[in-house]
Length: 441
Image 1 (tube, helix red, strand yellow):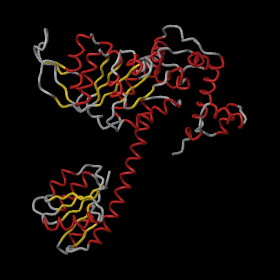
Image 2 (tube, rainbow, N blue to C red; image 1 turned 45 degrees about the vertical axis):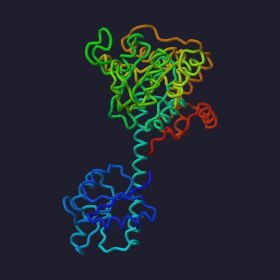
Image 3 (spheres, rainbow, N blue to C red; image 1 turned 30 degrees about the horizontal axis):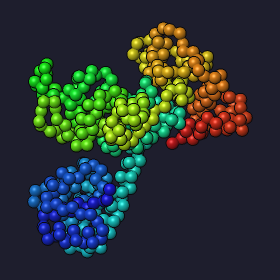
Image 4 (spheres, rainbow, N blue to C red; image 1 turned 90 degrees about the vertical axis):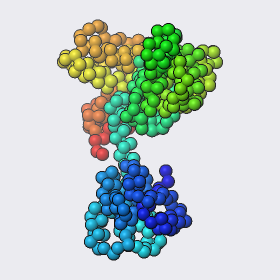
């Protein structure tokens, strides 16, 4: 975004003269005759500088400075005055003004001030963005648990896509966490304060699908008593999550495509067109393009939904996450059920790591709840070789030791009784990096 200069002065001739100076120097300028109008236009992350006269009818420059400081204490404000008042200048600087120029001032003086102020603003905003990114990474890591390369990559993709308005298609097996990923895309983006609406397309009878998605007016069909707001309209301003999108009837796919193209909808039985602003996150198990080639899904809708595609790895492809996830689900179940929780021992971990987990994370959560309740036999290894189980267990032991010792290699060597070269080779094979476990910031 190009930096802007907001110029506030009640004299039109001064506004025009300063605008010409600044635009000839390459600045983008927006003019205001009243301080109130400028205040309404400034947002907390405004990428620019405010230049304002002090003596104006209504809200004056000092009052504007105070209001802008309350909005964003780091926003540079340069004040201008035709009155050589030292006390006024001192007061303005104490209130947080970036600088104070006395009229008449040379273009060079103003341009020099602006250049320094804009550079300061750029650095402040970059620093804020960096802090937000770090905070978002930490918050997302607490919600989408795991240290496997597939999950680390997925979290990065979520943070990259969340601020954008594009539709996203999620591919993953049942129980792999597609709705959680959809919620993260919503919660870490600009629509976080708006509605998140989830709809399972496979759970709705075909004859009710149109009413559920688009809504209806009273009397639109037999039994339609009263107006109903559909999921699309209810999600307006926010995010609509369409799970098992491959199950949507073909007739409704056509209507959904039109809504996505025009960003408008009509309730069933109405001629009124309603403007929409929403993001679609859809989830599917099969490849939608293959479904389209088989005649079961519209190809044009598949492309419209699949602006960006995220693949959720099955649990069997990220076995190193199983101990962390199981501990998390044990703690959740114990707190919810009011039962004590016993951490799994080495033998139990080996059983968990060797299981095939066809139900993915959902099955693991169920196993943890059953364990807290003392019900059922533990999962046993299914379809995994002894070598695969040993590899997964070894990776978990290395990761746990590195975490306990904050990435200190000597301490890990002593605990596991491994020579440095062997430890380095094993860490490299399992994709473990010492820096990921260090305690220092």
